[in-house]
Length: 116
Image 1 (spheres, rainbow, N blue to C red):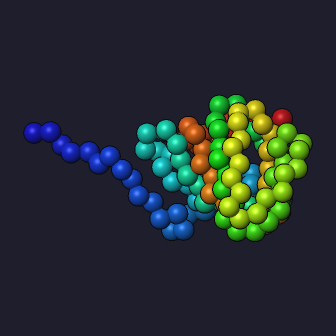
Image 2 (image 1 turned 180 degrees about the horizontal axis):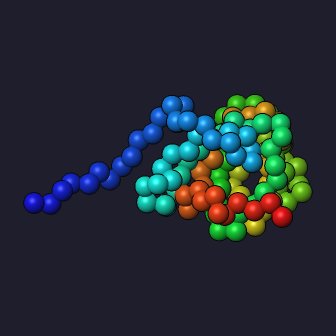
């Protein structure tokens, strides 16, 4: 008999334990499922660190707060409902206290986080 496999996953982001990250703290979902993508609820802190990824794309959606995002040394103002696509190699960091959704594609891999 064949075992049925669910073709979906559900996560309650605000109930996932927060993990320290270069941006502040992140609550990460779906990274272990099939590695296609993940989704993070991120609280951006004032001491966010500039970094980049060699493989991963990221999509940021600002939910709360205002400030700017540094993208390859260019400062872009952001506010709620601003969406940003960050391609591999783009050095980036958010500046200001914000809450965002981050969608890494493929799924987040800490080995693809670079600070040089």
